[in-house]
Image (cartoon, rainbow, N blue to C red; front, side, top):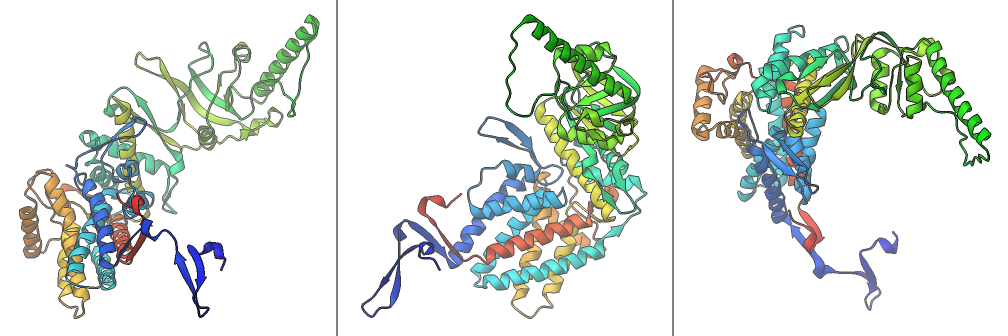
Length: 543
């Protein structure tokens, strides 16, 4: 071990025995044992409390203002936590928990944090009873396994060909978002987009083929799905045609300009004749480049780089419409959709490398003269674009996030067509099942089982609270009905429809999402319960 790695200095006593003198002990803050665990639980609960009011169809939105003054309004759990300025290490773990649910499933990011917060709360009660943290963690792990078994019993499989079920599932996730007023249309857009790119044999969905573009202006209802690619560009010259049919496009990553030496160079022009020769050389080169593109059979050039007005004029003169400054991701998507090859040098351009599209048209919006290009009827019809409209940038961003969640839910159903019913019904059914299982356990884990069952009830409690219902009264009524009627589909009637049966309300959630929520929340709580010592600088720890 190197001496430099020791956080202090090595000294020897009069008998030659070594001991360490550790520096700056007065500047260190240390928490150990239950005190440390309770500090973690407090931080985790604080984060969960923030998200609790955003759960469910009646959940409230949060407004985050960044240091630059950018405003974000959302009730998406992962987005809220990403924008929160969190210092406490355990609170950061809660942020990562929400992010991992978002990456893996795409939905349920609020629920997973609320569940983790409730488990931490129950763990604190059990710690106060004198139960060892490891026994609590093990009990929670066993309860989670029991919970997953029960979920699999409650799950219902539905046929993939049934689009109405997919639309209902997408509507469930959209009902808590800003687009809830037009969730039917949004759900249909999400389902059509996923089915257009899904490979039903391998049950896989390539998200790269679904592009979501936003344009401020218009209403949310004007959001539309285009079977093709939309790029936020227009034709380089205003006199170029606005609609092209039977398009063969050259997709270029080389600039429309005369070739330059790659090394550092200097060109001296000493006379007017030299200048005229240089100008003629440039023009000849431009004409040669344009002719080469036309000879390959192209009637549209998509260029990653820009070109000057002279090149633009020559392109118009030679009747070759062009689009400039198209970004890398868009170029790749166009190549995928049209079946073309990206060409890095004009010399390599051949007719086989051209992309094909039925129609390329310019779309204009309102009176702002904003234009976008739509490339439709592509050979690879799998590439689709959703064009989101909304009254402000904040609304457009929130609609994009809502559609992302809906697309993820539909993708999850295609991967695993098993559903459970939402509205807190599965949590109540699981809570009842775990309470029953707890009575059969003779060891200390029985307490952890009961704590886990109580934590599961935090979801229906939060749903009822956010819907303006008396939470405890509503929950006890539904629990009693589930037991007496033996109907695990009964949940919280947040929308005031008059029925608590989630099957009648068509509130569906993917089984995979629920299992993931319970597993991730339990693993995080286990990890937090196992930390019993913190050393930190005095001013550097805290929330």
